[in-house]
Image (cartoon, rainbow over all chains, first blue to last red; front, top):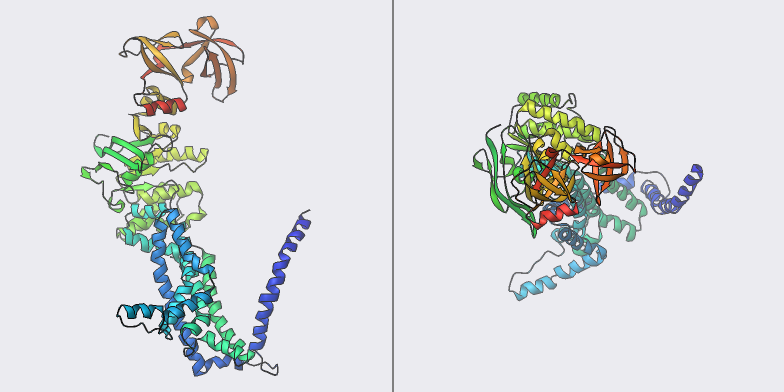
Length: 276
Length: 357
């Protein structure tokens, strides 16, 4: 009986197994294959080594810098917001959370295009500024516009996990800290912040990884002058039709992503236990 | 047990339309074990939270040791709270939990270590320093919560239904442990519970509350033997409560039958409530009783039998070590000093509750 049950359960897992084999594992293996071979199919590290060219290193460095800045801005914006949300009534806070999630229902390409329109030299913001006789905003095609786009696109991914952990902290625990003599700053530093570390870690990863790999945002808001590592890889595949070097650089990027994933896994395993 | 330590003066609290505490006056003496007892929603926890500083009253004052602390922040009060669900810090070891308050106060390392060892010994959990809270059972967590509070040497320990989440046996053990702790520490305990047995076992003073009003303040014996109104009588222990007529001093008419009693001063032919505890009802031969009835149910309870006796259209609850099978005709007799006469409640609220109960 039990054996049969187990077989049926496996049957239900089938579609997902086929899906993940076909669309996750095989493509991943293909990237490894292309990344580690040359045009003739011989094993080589040259594709990976292409990251060390000055232009590519600059693209990687800039991508790292911009995504770190965006992640930091997201964290600084999201954390206080989540603190406020946690202290609101359930109705109010779920309404505000909904407002934050709402943009995620729209295509991110569309949202980024909208920013392009807003920020353009003759865009809506500058028309309004001109009407008010204020100096025009000239950030389109600069790294600032890219950061703006990243923060706008990925902020919800920071808000949700942090809000989640903060709202799960028992209010009695905070009351207990106050009761034992901690003022509100001490309560925050010793209780609330350490307990919210798992949320911060997953929020940081959820913003950092897509920021690091994006090429759409830098393409649309950075003009074609500012190249991030995502744009370089995209060009290798599309313009250069060089799958080998594109895959090689993707592997490099993957190392950064695996590193940040490992960070999450570490804190997930330890739970909220030793996050202090 | 003489000095007033805490004085609660005219305290009222409401949430919107909902009046939770209605102009409460109460004092708590030094070294007293005072229990706030009442059904859920009676305001007992709100009163405790006002004492702890987590809520502030709409009107009235809380005087602590001669000083007004009504608006003082919780971290500045010389009292500590043991929360219902323990509220241990999940990110810290047991030792770090206990040390929390002392570290904030900037005590020396040696002092803190001594205190941790002392507190763990006091709650019988030596050697638990490096464990994490979630690896402890409910009873152990509760004891750590108590240890964490008492190392700060508060003048008053506030306990919010601390045994509510524990099973019966553990709860009884913890009751004795709390009494022992209180005697060893010599501090004031303010204890909140809805469990009347817990209150009777541990308290020096019981404050019975209902719907934001204090119903009665007294020793456990007072509260049990001399309930001041039907609510208290009904809430503390089991009881037979009758609408009765006080015919004259020392004579009360219950269900149309005159019973001699010992109470005086209610006037003539005044409506009153009469309370008779089930263990005070004597079942005798039909002719020897003041009233006759028929046993309608019989349950063995271990120490005694619990019987329902139908007499004059009312079901009397009787506890007795003598057994009368269902269907037996019996006589009902009550000793005069076992009848407790109470004034009818003045407010409609209290009346509504006594009927609904």
